[in-house]
Amino acid sequence: MNLTIMMMIAAATQYIPSTPSLGVAEGRCRPNEPGPAIVVDVAGLRDRQGRLKLEAYPSNDADFLADDNVLVMAGKVFRRVERPLPASGDVRLCIRVPAPGEYSLSLLHDRDGNRRFGLSSDGIGFPNNPRLGLSRPSAAATRVVAGRGLTRIRIVMNYRRGLSFRPLGQ
Image (cartoon, rainbow, N blue to C red; front, side, top):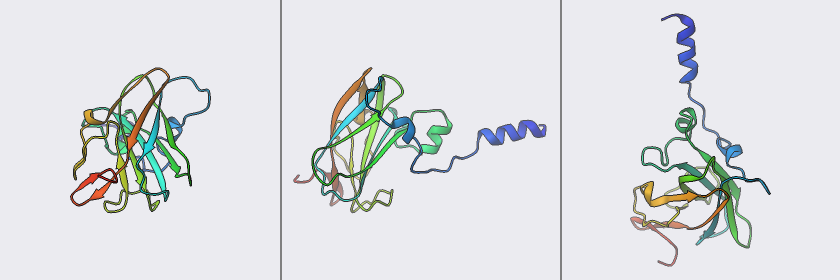
């Protein structure tokens, strides 16, 4: 194999370092922008500390919650919206998706703002509010069908209680 071909293969397989901005530009909703997006009303927050991170994935078990770098390198859907929690009022996030269709979403309440999921402190939520244990839900359980415009859903946050995750008050 000649050097040029080897360099092209190496460039095509390079690892993209994960950054908090990966997928953000693609996921940003802008006022009056046409096209599909999912609006998420967030319920059941423990408090107003930290940040919320909403991510959209292909709706299949192999890609749902997969490494964002791997998805981007493979040309697959990955979108992210991250916002500080407002001090009061309704909490709503909007994430743009590339086309109408099926997507799986995850929502993290990163209470300490370290951009990592803290098993004992942070909250997690998914569309359709599947029952959560210590393993991740299936893509089918978290699937949203986005239409051509805005698709509105509600996600209830879950926090660790014993060996499972549940909404507060349950």
